[in-house]
Image 1 (cartoon, rainbow, N blue to C red):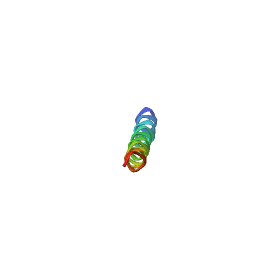
Image 2 (cartoon, rainbow, N blue to C red):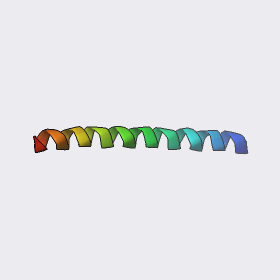
Image 3 (tube, one colour):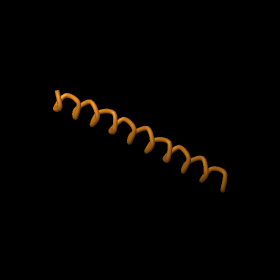
Image 4 (cartoon, one colour):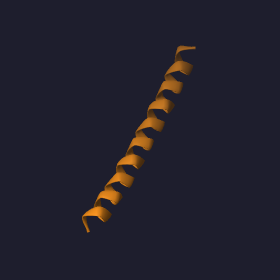
Length: 36
């Protein structure tokens, strides 16, 4: 059971990381468009 919880938390953490990196990339592209 503990292992399952660890797996779930790891996947949730990974999803958050990938989502936040996508957000950073999109905001970066938007800021560069605004700057040019």
